[in-house]
Amino acid sequence: MRTYDFSPLSRSTVGFDRLFDLINEMPHVQDAYPPYDIVRTGGESYRISIALAGFTPEQVTVTAHQNRLIVTGNKRDSGKQDYIYQSIATRGFERHFSLADFVEVEGATFQNGLLHIDLVRRVPEAMRPRRIEIISHSVGTNTKTLNAEMPKAVSGKAA
Image (cartoon, rainbow, N blue to C red; front, side, top):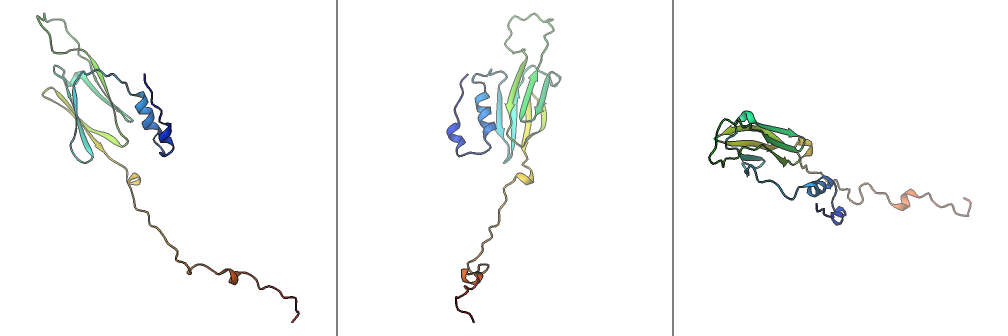
C-alpha cells in the first residue's frame, strides 16, 4: 500500500488530520461490482444509485455509521435452476462510501433494479460561517497622554 507524506501541508492547515488519514487508508483497487452512480440533486443533496439486477429489497442492507455508508447484498442461490448460461451476477457484495462531515442518509428506495440512496448535507447552525464584527478604537478617544499619567516631578526647590 502506498502512503503519502502530507507534512508540508501540515504547516498551513489546521484540523485536516482526518482527511489525510482517509486518503492514506483508501484502497487503491476496488471491485467494480455492483456498478453505481453518484449524482448531485441539489445544492446540498446527493443521490447514490446502485444497479442491483436480480436482488430484492429484502436481500440488501443499507447501514450508516458515523461518516461511513455500507451497502451489503446477500443473494442465496437455491440451486433449483439448471443454467445453460448465467451472466447476471448473483454473488454477494459489500460497498463502502465515505461521507463528508454532516452528510446524512435521508432515505433509500428500490425501484426497477436500482437502489437509490438519498443524502443531504445539514450543517448545524453553530458550524455555519458567521460574520465577526470588528470593533475599532479611534486614536484619542480612550487614550491618555503619557504626561497626564505621570506624576509631576518634584523639583529640588522647596515652596
